[in-house]
Length: 126
Image (tube, rainbow, N blue to C red; front, side, top):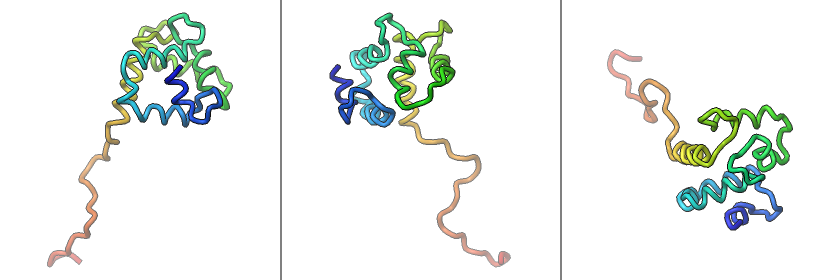
C-alpha cells in the first residue's frame, strides 16, 4: 500500500495516467522485486496470481475508454505464454523493458546528422 500511496499524488484513491508516469520516473528506487510484486498485486485485484484485462481496466481505465478491446490488446502485448493473462514474470519483463526504453535515446533518422552551422561556399559554389 505504501507504493500506491506514494503514486497517488492527489490522494483520490486512484492512480491516473499522469501519476503512473510520475511513479515510473523514479524507476531506480522502484524496480526491485518487492516493489514490482506490490505493483503487480495492485493490478491483481482478485488475488489470483495473474492480471486480466478487466483488472487493468479497473486500475488504468478510470476516465478512459470503455472499449474492452483496448485492455485485451494490452494483455496480448505483455502475455508471453499466450494464456490470456499476465503473470508476475511477464509483468516484471514488461516493467524492465519499459524502464530500458525510457533510458534509451530516440533513434536518429538515417543519413548524416544535420549541421547546425552553415557551410561556407567554396569557389565553385554559389
